[in-house]
Image 1 (tube, rainbow, N blue to C red):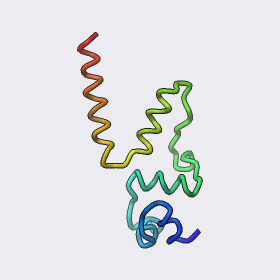
Image 2: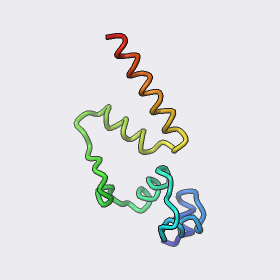
Image 3: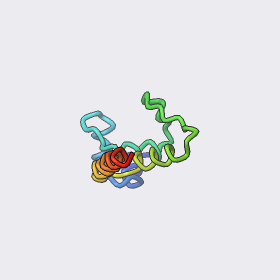
Image 4: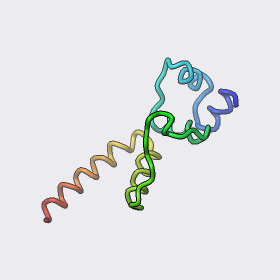
Amino acid sequence: MTQAELGELIGITDKHVCKIENATYMPSLETFFKIIQVLNIDLNEFGINISPSENKVRNKFLELIYTSPDDKLEFLYNCCVDLNKNLKILK
């Protein structure tokens, strides 16, 4: 697969792919996960262990985190923190 083909599949330019490949630029998490999905790379190769849990809700939550764009992650995090605080108050 060429850099141009990969870039087209994940929504970035071939120059951007080249910079990532040459380690002159670090991709966003969103781009990183698109790359590994398109190239069918196992996260364990990066030392990232996301073995499926027995808990289906946890797996869905992790999938949401890993597939959300970077600009939405802080919002999701803040929602979870606020919700957790409110749940503690209700106890």
